[in-house]
Image 1: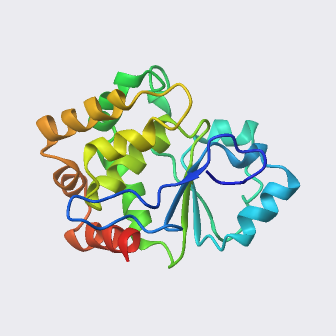
Image 2 (image 1 turned 180 degrees about the vertical axis):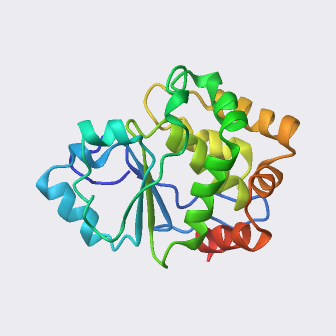
Image 3 (image 1 turned 180 degrees about the horizontal axis):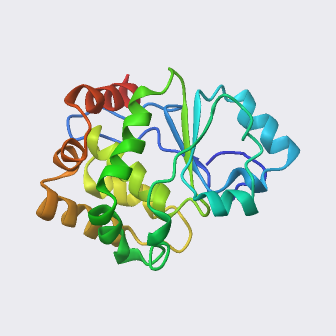
Length: 203
């Protein structure tokens, strides 16, 4: 867990195993809830982590209500993961499948930004650090070779979340889109960009 005062759902996904015996590198990908609730000490801790890019997956209206303390920082990027018209139902567990089906290009565009980010730790967050963050992290971990059961175990660390939600989502991704790689390639990512994300999480 991340010791970011004000964040209640922050963690490093480092240490998760891949199917070929490797592990996700600690400090490569950090996930959390909104940074708008960080204390002064929490803000200082985030800055000290040397993060190269913060991806705020929230919509503009959410940011207007609860601004990020890093909004004016070069490392900050507002990258809404799904369209604002998709607000209704997006927090319902099985709606993750709809999120993937109806926002393929937008989700892929954010994934590409992960690939193209400067070297260094990446931080992703939405409001609760559960739904949009959970879907993006699941895609990134899948591309890196982490098996579904381990991705689900990480997701379940969020209070009130069941690993079955992500397992069903990944099954849908496989059955309807051919898996994470095929989904992202069809959404506009290149093979090189998929390798970039994999390499920065593993090396």
